[in-house]
Image (cartoon, rainbow, N blue to C red; front, side, top):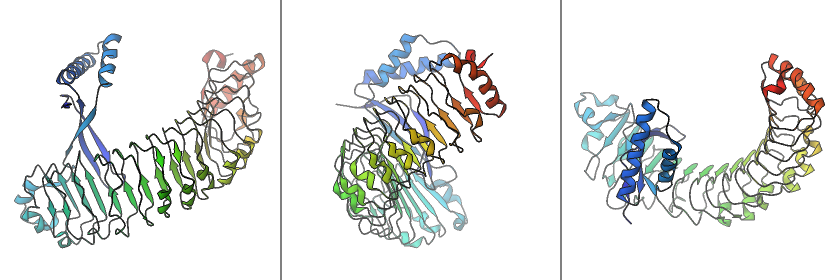
Length: 457
């Protein structure tokens, strides 16, 4: 099946979450030329209508959404980073010792131009849409710390020369041939291989003794075979095709942050409990129907994101997570919560919206460090009986439930900033109390969301 780029493209910035942000032109791809043309035509009509401030018919927007559903992928075209000296400009500079950032783009040579080596103080080198196969003599750059290789197509595996100073390597491309090893980059701390179409965990990283961050997002990885990387602190695997987290995850004994968003994970090895230093764990939008057993045994865990899964219950072992500060459980199928939740005395943010809860644990009021409590869009018939103990509460959302009685102490919360109470069947007593409480809170600059007919006398 031939894939064709659409005419209209989108320009945006992609951050490496470290030192560098890249500008990229992203072109949607379609399986047929007719789809590509049709999508471009719809884009043009919509842009013209918006420019003339004309109302678009629903049928047109529906057709546009249908065309978007036919997108098979995206072609990414990078641009030289703003502020970087280009190769043409470099050749005109009489004093190249002042060059700190250099971008080489659209070069057909298979090796670095000689002019590059006349920049003794170069700190960052960027290759954009090039065909360079050998990046040699990097040790000549005593100040070089960043190497960014974007859509380089060397027609074979790229070779990176030995360097003791480069700490960050970013490689992005549709189907690049990655180096067999990054061992020559002796001081490598951050390796970003996002958007490369790779299907397996990269090999040869065990020789990078200083590696702390590994970014493998937006690839096609299915099976994880993870080597021993004891220095790794951050692993990002967003938008891959992972279904199972294997026992080899325990090879990352120093891991502090693990991000697995937008996969199809339905099972996790109990060996994840061996990640004794793990502080942040995210399973956002996967297919978990329960919190993995090993997660309950992570002693350093401070934040876990389980948004958009299929979880029905939370085990009482949640009490083991004594360091937990943020718990994201919204958009699941949770029916009940254990009383042990109230023992998480370090908890600051609790997100439970869009579940099937009919009640909350009575001890929830004991969470005196709680700043955010969002329980909207459930089946609650009663809010926490009293919130007066939640003296640090800043954000409370109890909207979209079956609550008929106001919780006590709302107007006495000292640091409350946002209160959302809409779409509840309040009883007559509560309806009579709401106007006064709303005025009191708004006079304290609290943002109160309630049906205006209820906030008025």
